[in-house]
Length: 236
Ligand code: 5RP
Image (cartoon, rainbow, N blue to C red; front, side, top):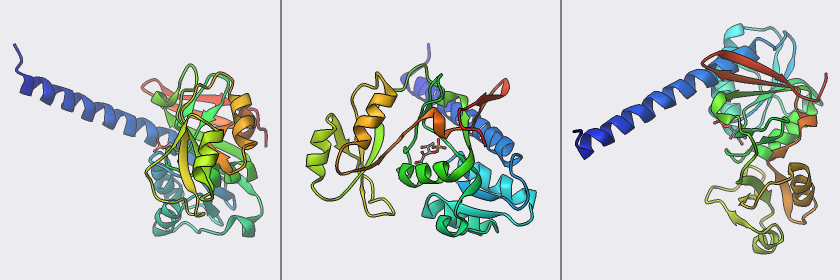
């Protein structure tokens, strides 16, 4: 019979295998998305570990004339280190394509984003793009969205804002690059559209991490069977 130490070692080995499978799936989705980028494009770059695979895949294509807008300082630094040109979104005006990860993807194409606390800039970049492509490993697919929903809120009277979106709590992370607090809404998500409208209408909420299907053009989900390509509602 296996000892407790053997069982712990087996669990840890299983965890490591799962992590490496997830990593492989994230890389596959990211590499497929990099192939969608055309020379001369204005490209929005998301934030997170899936996008971390996109940046080298995009740089390796050596496309002429790419100009990229980053959704976080971390992505901007990583992209620049790979030789990708980073430009302010305002300078580009609009984007041909943006590519980003997601925390959850439901069957109707609703997303939860903001696990990396970058959802405010990510939503601005997604909305500015003619084509918004979501890349994910299969573990991000869910039958129904579940909390938490990331919420960026103003530093002014945060507990008043949190009470207005109860149940919610502050996340113990640094301020956003725009100087705001990051919180999480923890209640039920019976109707994502209604919750999104409620969060958007709450004074003090800067942005929430619910992304509607109307923002999304394509969802590339990588798993053991290859890449599933779902179409969103946003058409270039
Ligand atoms: C960051 C995000 C990320 O796209 C999301 O959290 C997915 O992250 P990862 O690719 O690391 O799984 O919304 O704010």
